[in-house]
Length: 55
Image (cartoon, rainbow, N blue to C red):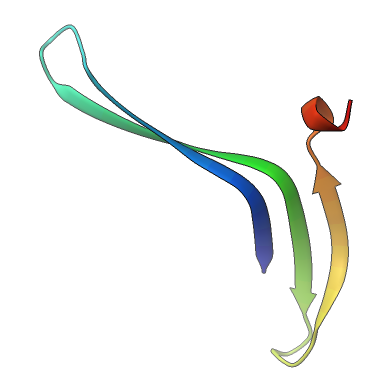
């Protein structure tokens, strides 16, 4: 199981053929990946931080 800290960016636009389009971006500042051992306890596997924000 993964958990994300960040934000969702939704966009809506009309293309050149006058078709309405939608887009969604998941912008994760931090991702925590957990591995499950037979659905019992989850162990933390790693935390990944955005290189852009980590500077």
